[in-house]
Length: 355
Image 1 (tube, rainbow, N blue to C red):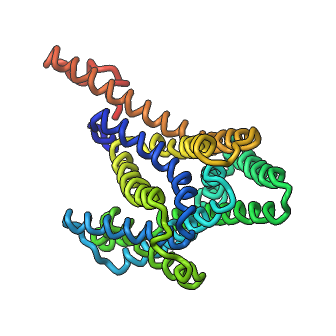
Image 2: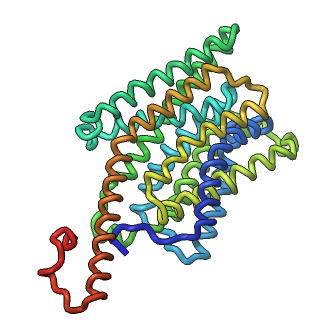
């Protein structure tokens, strides 16, 4: 097997895992919107991440993973604050005023912020015409969504709240990007690498951080003072359970597993599918109307994401084809030697000696 090649995996398991990250992650925007019928936004986040972190931490303990490392927990707390608290709090709060479909489209535009904020990659990113065009087009798509939400209402107060909600979604998306970049560039010594916690354990600590912060916020905003468990409709307990088990645990586990068995660029295609799933659910199962401008905005943003990723896709494809060619040459050489053991390197074409 070539170095860096992904390990073999059951085709059925791969299909199931892709279905989960495509459909389940896309559906979480819908289930958040539904659960908000009974849960205040910060209590919803608190219940979701406290329960998910407890389940995931218990699983890690049963697996025998190391649970404590001061530096790793500090890193997880920073990333958890930005990804699971700031961004998710923004999504949950905003979905009181905009549909899950619109929230998912704004989330898909996160690729813009990765290009703009990943400073070590500026020279590489901004030397690509397709990347720059994708950023510009992505901004146009976001502006279209803002315009659509403003035009969709005649009430100035309602329109203002929708614009605020969209702005918070954008800020949350930026926080997600910053947290992801911190995680990406967080430098560790060789010793720290060896002592680092398993990725599932670090994710559990991220969820612990989010759960604690959601709890504190719910207390300070007075949500707990006016909330009673008896006021929660049975269907919304189901919606919360779905977010905990399927959204926070099963989908993430499938994502991590896929990264181990499939190319990262391939796995990242979930970003194209999630907003489509969210928009379909919003159209058929909520009172929100999916407008033609929303669909056009989604198409513009997804095309912009494709443009921003185009250079990376081409590089990955070229590298994969090169490795495939080398492997074919090696196999041809092995068959040649097997057919005639007396064959030496002098009689082998130069191209077949490339490694």
